[in-house]
Amino acid sequence: TKASVHQPDVQRSILMLERNITFLETHRTSGKITDEMLAKQFLEQYNSTAEEVWNAYTEASWTYNTDITEANKEIMLQKNLEMANHTKIYGLEARKFDTSDFQDESVKRILTKLSDLERAALSEDDLIEYNNLLASMETLYSVATVCKDQSTCLPLDPDLNKIMAESRDYDELLFAWLGWRNASGRELRSSYKRYVELANLAAKSNGHTDNGAFWRSLYETPTFEEDLEALWKDLEPLYLNVHAYVRRALYKKYGPERINLKGPIPAHLLGNMWAQTWSAIMDLVIPYPDATQVDATPAMIAQGWDPKRMFQESDRFFTSIGLLPMPPEFWNKSMLEKPKDGREVVCHASAWDFYNRKDFRIKQCTVVTMDDLITVHHEMGHVQYFLQYKDQPISFRDGANPGFHEAIGDVLALSVSTPKHLQSIGLLDKVEDNKESTINFLMSMALDKIAFLPFGYLMDQWRWKVFDGRISSSEYNKEWWNLRMKYQGLCPPVPCLRWSLSKGTHSILTMQSILFDKNHLFLKVYLLFLVKFV
Image (cartoon, rainbow, N blue to C red):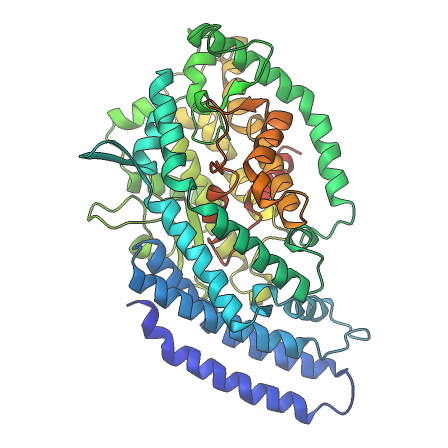
C-alpha cells in the first residue's frame, strides 16, 4: 500500500529521535535546560523528523479515506500510533526547556505548542481505543445507506443529499431525513460516550479541565465564550428576519398543517440534511423571480462541465490574481469526484497537506452544481494557504488560529459567486444592475452564510457542554434539539426518539477524523463567516 513504503523513513526518524534525546541529556546539568541554541538544534531535528512521520500518517489516512477497508484502516491506525509516539517523546523533551530568557519568540512558541501532547498523552491502550472509535464511527457514517426496497439503497452522497436539495415533496424529504438518521445514528451513542471520556482524559493529562476547554484554548482569548455570545446577539436580529421570511415562503408551499407561522421550522424542509445552509431552497424564497438569478448550474450542465473542469477553472482564477498554480501532485493524486469502481470513500470535501512541501490534494465527491463550484474554490483556497506556508516550521503549517484557515479559503472563493465573475467565465448570460437583481443575490448569500451562523455556534455549544458534563449521555438528543430551537428556531419533523443523535453527534465524528482529529470545525466555520465580512 501507499502507506507502507514510508516505513524506512519512520524508522530512521525514530533513530534520529533517540540520538537527539541522548544529546539533550548530555547538555542538561540540573533542572530545566536554558540554552537557546540547543533548543534551536532540538527544533530543527523535530521539524525534519516530524515531516517524515506526519507524511507517512497522512498518506495512510488518505488511502483509508479514499478506499474504506479494514486493511487500510489498520495501516492508518498503526501510522497514527507512530505519529503519536513521535509527538509524545518530543513533547516531553520540549517540557525540559526553560524559555523565560529566550530571545526568539518563534522558538518559545513552538516549544509551548509541542509541550501540549494532545491525544498522544493517552496510554497506548487508550490511544488505540480512541483511534479505533473514531475510525469505526467515521466508517459507519460514510457507508450508511437508506433503502427504498431490497434492491435500491441510497448513500448520503450524492443520492440523499440530492433528494434533500431538490425534492419539494414533504414525505419524500421526511423519508430521506429520518431514514439516514435511522441508518447512521443508532449505534453511535455508546461509542460517542466513550470517545468523550478518552478525549477528556487526554485534555486533563495536558493540564486542561476538559476537551472543550482545550479547543477553546487554541483561540488564545480569555473571554472567548463571552465574545462569541456577544457576536451572536449582534447577529441574531438579522437571522430572525431571514428565518421569518423563509418560514413564510415555506408556509405558502406546504400550508398551515405543516408550517406554524409563530413556531419553529421543521428541519427537513431547508434543502440540507442538517439545515446548516438553506441555499438549495432559493427557488421557494426568491424575492424577485423575474429578475436575474445567480445560479450557474444550468449553464455548467449545458456546456458539459465535469468535476475536473471545475477545478481547472478554479486554478485559473487563483493564478489570475497572482497566486500559485496547483503542483503536478495535485492533479495526479487528488480525488476530484466519487470513484465509479465501487470503493467506499469519505465524501466530505477536504484539502490535504502531506507535509513534504510539494504534495497537496483535495478529496471531494464533486457534483456539477454552482454550490460545488464554490466549494471547489473554497478547498483550493486552503491549498493556496498550504503553498504559501509550506517552508515554515511544521508547527506553524496551520492557520493563525482555528478559524483563520477557513476564512482564507472562503474569502478567496467569495468573488466566485458574484454575477460579474460568473458572466466573465461564460456561466451567466447577463448581469442586471438593478435593485431586484441585487436583492436576489443578497438573499442567496443570506441563505448560505447567515443561515449557517447559529448552526456553527450551537454545534460547539453542545459539544462543550457534553465535554464538561453539563449534558449527560442520556440527554444528548434532548439538549441538541433544545439548542436548535433556541438558536436556529428549528424542530425535528418527528418526535425526538431516544436513540436518535441527529447531526449533533454522528456528523461531528466525520469532521473530527479529518486532518489529525482537528475536532473544532464547526466553530471555525462560524468564525470564518464573521471574519471574511469584517
